[in-house]
Length: 168
Ligand SMILES: [Zn+2]
Image (cartoon, rainbow, N blue to C red; front, side, top):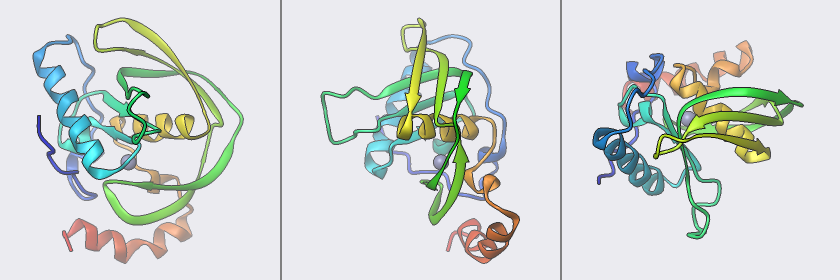
């Protein structure tokens, strides 16, 4: 297990559509362990495999990382199958440090996914979980939360984003 560090804005892996997982083997379990270590070291609520440089459709969400009895959700090959409502809230991303912006998301989503045993499971999320699911599923589709911001806000963030891209 290792904390691999978070890939930052500007890394092309964040803009790729990630590959589906075809078999849950030791390689996938190792990726999940690395993602968990990296997530907890980064104090985020969610992480997608491209954020550790792996272009696969795996995301992990833990909306309550300080509560050990709440298990993280390991989500493989997720598909959003139901949505309802809309809500606009501040959002940020471990790959885009110090940048925040208001993003409109569905208030409730239902996601079908595989768990680590290969079982097909439905996850229903509202509030923070719904937002985290949509944010992380965007990641495996090569999308970032800043893509949802207004053109004006994107323009205002241009210099800040360029600095992250250049590793400053
Ligand atoms: Zn993110």
